[in-house]
Structures are given as structure tokens and as C-alpha cells.
Image (cartoon, rainbow, N blue to C red):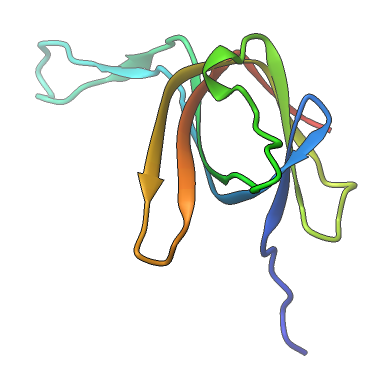
Length: 124
């Protein structure tokens, strides 16, 4: 029997579904290698750091004017879940906008590229 894998996802910003074409989530653990001078000539451990969560979203805007004010997002909740499986939700809390850009393509598609920071990831 064939395996079934996760496909597309749905993204909500403060409970409002957003039309996105791409979502990247990156978590930097903050851990760093601690190099010491010793007889083995190798590092022997790491230090704990501060976790950083970054979300990169590419969103399209409908022509009807329903536009999110991306540059003014502060302390928002972003929730993603697989299409047809709303039970498997992951939320990012305390989200704030870092950078917003626009791009236009030959396929007559305008999109916004948004980079956000988050303070916490919660798997619901």
C-alpha cells in the first residue's frame, strides 16, 4: 500500500485564512559549539543559546481589496495546518513583521514576500 504524505497547508493570521503560495519556517536553536584547547584537538561541547523562529510567507492578494496590512503586524498568532487535517495545528505566537516586499511575475501574478519573527511555537 502506498504511503500518504502531507501536502499543502492552510495559514491563518489571527483566525483569518490567508491565500499563500509558500511558507517557510526556520527555527535557529541558538546552540553554539564551544571550542576549547585540549589534548584531543576537538571541541567537547556546546552552549545553550536563545531560540529564534523566522517565518517567510509569500502571499497573493485578491483583486477585491481584502488586503492585510503586513507591515504593521505585531503580537499576532499565525496558525498552519495541513489541508484536510485541521486537527494537526501548529501556532506561532507573538509574531511581528521584520520585512515586507512585493514581486511581479510574467504570469501576471503579484505577490507579497513577508518575513516575520515569532516568540513561541506551539504544537496543538
